[in-house]
Length: 224
Length: 227
Ligand SMILES: Nc1ncnc2c1ncn2[C@@H]1O[C@H](COP(=O)(O)OP(=O)(O)OP(=O)(O)O)[C@@H](O)[C@H]1O
Ligand SMILES: [Mg+2]
Image (cartoon, rainbow over all chains, first blue to last red):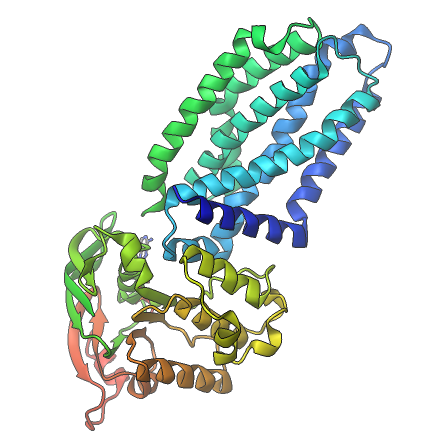
């Protein structure tokens, strides 16, 4: 692992994104509109809102993340610059790590804006600690990005690319998705502190395992 | 120095390269000719470590590319039809980025001057013409001072003027002792830049060509005989 190389690629990706902002704008717009739609679709005084909101919040992040992820590798694959990267003496692992870090930065950026927005729009009263809720979402996003970046690399060569990505990513992410929803409910509704939630530890372990698997398999994917 | 030994590449059941052997000496410039689908890009892809061979061996300056791919990559610069540049970065930023990946610290301004782009250093590459991108692509390929330059149809899509500018750059690199491997569909291009070469067809070397010999040679005649 060469941190200098990883950092160079992350810096490059952020710079490229900062010029066009295509991905960020799209992710943010999606998040904002979804939150707004849900806001109008529910009765603010109904107890149902309280019950489904954590799941909804997480749902919005997953789909916003999906939009970002499908771009991270595919754009470089389509323009051929991924080959240009492979010509340089940077290891495939480092390219993957860089993409994961880049995606994490995008997701955390969206989360930092969307989470407060959610609380304000819904006038939501989190029963537990707000920080814990934020952390659960963060762990979920990390899991999503790690698994998603890897899968995104995996399906790079597939034909109907973005479609394939979503079909493969969702089942693999299902354990994380469910565990995060349960954890979010426990924090946001039952006011249970983060460290006493078993599900979040399970989710974290799953993510670590997937990360290790991803780095082991990635070399096979990059070579033809 | 490029040494290719009994190299084969199969894609599923299709044999794209079939037992190719070549020896290209240090400082030599070598042309790979052949009709569409002959296997030129596949061979170049293996030499530049983008593709893994099915069998056989490649040595770059005595480094086995299968054993030490990163070391081999440091000795090779690649220019192909795709310039491998980021449209959203400036010319300078592109070169700086690739220099970081090669852990090298070239004089970016002088590199840009060499390819006549010093006046466009701070412009986005997306605004460049194809000829300018191709010239910048040369700068990208030589910024780590490789001993070998691999050029895969580098002038396709360039007009005469850009092509000439490109040729003089390559000639200059040749005079500086770089080993050059060029694939091309143009015999005059091969004549202009290379000492000798081979014709590839259906994954096999079918003919050696001395490009400096005076014998009249027409690629059409060679290709027609291939069937
Ligand atoms: N990834 C791949 N999968 C399957 N077949 C491939 C792949 N890459 C190349 N081939 C096949 O290998 C053969 C050689 O292709 P290659 O691109 O090396 O030819 P080329 O000599 O560069 O042709 P051109 O002059 O058109 O550039 C072709 O028949 C091509 O269809
Ligand atoms: Mg080709």
